[in-house]
Length: 621
Ligand code: ADP
Image (cartoon, rainbow, N blue to C red; front, side):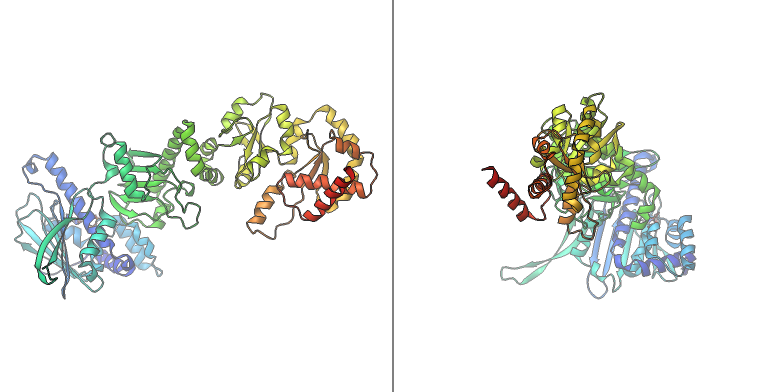
């Protein structure tokens, strides 16, 4: 048969593939195996559904052979549906899909060709010309008598001959070029198949020669061997009712390299307009790189059981980076690139559905207090991160938050708090800092304790960053007791008189403390302590400033705290009639310094503090 020319678009496509994808040339094997797997799927379907194909002896498999040497060869052979003469011409000489055509016409006119865009369509069969200078396709279609041989150098065109082949299926012989000769190797083929095609449903066999040696280590001869190189089970595609906990645990370990069983898993298949399967695991322990910017994402993307990527941080929102598992979709193109994934509508739907499924699962875990505590200790910070970053799921995530509390041991939720708060209580109160026991002893809690009001104890550094993003919950304001305004609601009528009483004292205190403080106020939140410091409504708290300092943040404007004094306290009462002078100043400074210390703030001048304290002790003794 005479030489046939490729459709113009095929030549363009070949050119693009060879020049844009060479850095990932190994994907050719994935593409060819995927085609074989499709061809096997098609014939399987026919033998199951069409009477004329039922008698056919169908042994689904893919065989790989190679020859090393000067003319290296790699052969991929399948027992799938095969191609007739017309199929060879239509499938391997033209481009059927209109999307690809449009894409190509856009690309060919464009000066700056974006190699990433090539991922918009499956590169398919033609990718083998990256590694081969000549390709032969020998094929016989199921139900036809005559086989054919298609031959091309991937440049201008191809030829089709009749062929004597007896077997139904397709054999692709790649005459490897310099770029491809490394694929004439058992290990290279094996690792590439493992990487991309391990879960192809059909067995993939690799034949090779093994050299035998005698007792003295001399070469005795060679034997031919054939091994199956893929696992051949897409675990996640197996029906749920066939799978036991043990099976899920085992698969988790192969997937995650975690020696422990997972905490839980989600296995779900969506059918209908969008078809995809997810199998997600929640580990018991957080992966060690979870708080590093260069963490390895734990979810692998497959398209029809063909591995696409395990290195895409966009498959799930970042706060879900502890999830390990698989997304397998039949609606995405095989060679979908990262850029395309990010814009892809199908992927967006899969992603949003996946997040919902994980959230549902976490919610159901949260019904088991002990189990959820285990989860929260490992991943609570990521839930907080989600509250902060993921606006779409903020509400669901807020419900999943847990806090320590002054009311009970262990964790409580905002819902628990709201359920048991007094009907006339307006706000949900919390205190932030980094040391749980210091927080529980804080003077800021005195009045709340006296009144039996629950306060949430937030001792994780990031709480202070996260909490302002939850201004209200179930129509109740969330208020930090570290701030000046929180105690306003606790104010009584009688407090006003007391404020008047200490007014002159406050003036004197201000003149002593000067620039150290933003303001001095009469407190209505203290009962046992004489003083405390709080932050002004929109200022970072003193605790927050300590954290920022510790993380090496510099150049922030210094924000001064507000000093509150307790008008009912003996020390304060005795200060009222005192005249200004050395002793007065010392006591005022001590009231300020002890408030700082209790608020977890390091003193600028500890020596001065000790000196003042010692002077007072001397006097008292
Ligand atoms: P895609 O697989 O994305 O459709 P390809 O370029 O890889 O694009 O293949 C084009 C077509 O050639 C396939 O759709 C299929 O019909 C046919 N084909 C390729 N390889 C085989 C094979 N091994 N057996 C049967 N048909 C094949």
